[in-house]
Length: 208
Image (cartoon, rainbow, N blue to C red; front, side, top):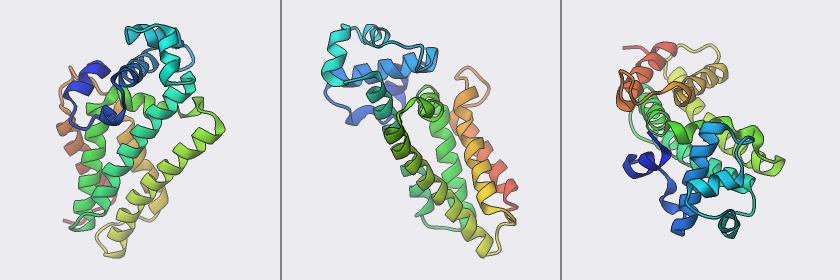
């Protein structure tokens, strides 16, 4: 599945807020190029060509290749944080909220795996200021999941000796889905989300 197909068919695809249309086309092309070739091996000419534009047209909307990556990363991390925070602030027990968070987070990383690979694995290509901004969003995502797990421990519903370490393990497990997910594989994004939610509940020792 290409990023364009993800954009057309993925209900959780976040590019709708990127305007005008030319800027969105360039961003989608950049995601595809970065995912396929890596940030450093991709040129602005590659991106413009995929979008059906001239290299000069790219600079009308983005000053640099890094600005494109920053925009992609910011939108993706905002979406990831929204997914997790929505679950954390929802009703129900800690187990129900953790299930919701993991299922939704994994579903996004599977359903939007091309985008998610760029969002999650090209962070080091950003300059210090942009990278610090994204790291701050990651810490908020971590805090939201950590809060759910801590609530479960406090309620006696989870058996977790190391809450920060377990939070890191949970998030790493979810994020890695973007690296290996294959649309031609045996499971859909929904099925992978359900599987991982069950695995995570086992990790935290959730009581029946």
